[in-house]
Amino acid sequence: MREEDIHAVSTVRITGWQAAYAGLVPQDYLDALTIEEDARTRRDMFARGDGSVLNLVAEEAEDGVVVGWAALGPSREEDREPGDGELLALYAAPDRIGAGVGKALILHTLVAARERPYSRLVLWVIAANARARDFYERGGFVADGGSAQWPVNGTTVPEVRYSRKLTL
Image 1: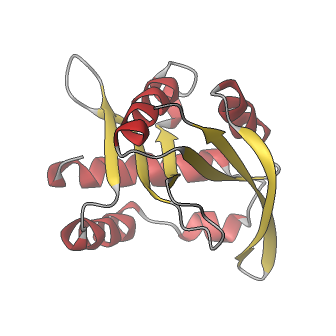
Image 2: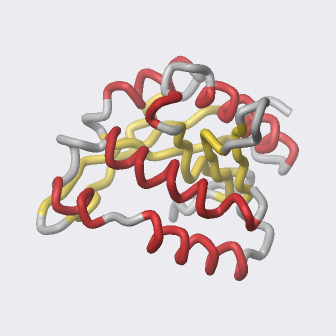
């Protein structure tokens, strides 16, 4: 990801959240998300970045329009092992879901994770998000028993952790 990609990444992220998480998280939370605020936050994170997080974008071949984004970094888990990485985010533009954008991003992310070199990759997904869970399972990730409660606007949203061993 380049700095000039930030607004497009925020567009993919926010529209992705609003499409994928409708009915899974409080609607008032989703309605309050704005591309502009997300882009401001992302610009700040980009400027302060220490290189530990790798942001990847998927672009349309013809015109370079950003249609997907993934972020990879060290695991944030308290019980992490040396060599654990985390897929911090992976989103495809809602109109590109099912078109191979997510698959391309996950493949490139796995290559980058091995190069870091991570020996295991974890990610978190909303427990009720069957589409995402199926996607990650097809990508070789397995629910490993980790769970968390994400507090959102006075309610909690159950999350499950997935992991995948990486061969170097």
